[in-house]
Every structure is written in C-alpha cells, then in structure tokens.
Length: 66
Image (cartoon, rainbow, N blue to C red; front, side):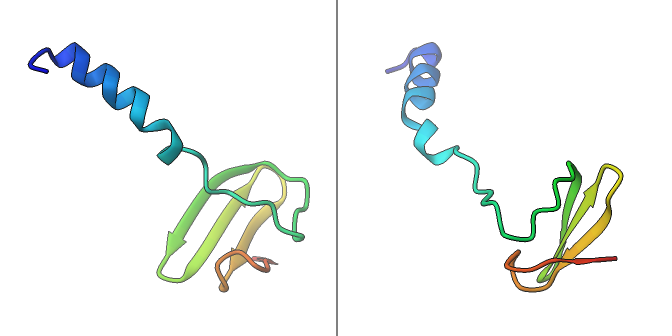
C-alpha cells in the first residue's frame, strides 16, 4: 500500500466507530444551546446562548448556574 490515497481511504473506512460523539444528555438540561464548552481541571463549564454559564464539578452529573 504505497499509494497515499489508498491509505487515506482505508483510514476513513476504519476510524468512524472511534469518532462518534461522547456527549450524553443529563437530567439537568435547561433547553439552552451550549455555545462554549470548557474544562479546567475537574470542572466543566458550559457557556449557553442566553442562559448564562453552567458549572459541573462531578463530570456532568449535576450542574449549577454561575
């Protein structure tokens, strides 16, 4: 397989199962659109469109407004 096109085609064929999104909806959904997700250490932040900023300190199991 010295042809780079063949290698690229093979990579696209084999990678899709590993490229799926890892987001899971939680019960804390407020219906706001997340515009800017961020992480700092163990804290998760979700900046929303019109809903403010939400903080999770337990990997997204629960959220508080900031």
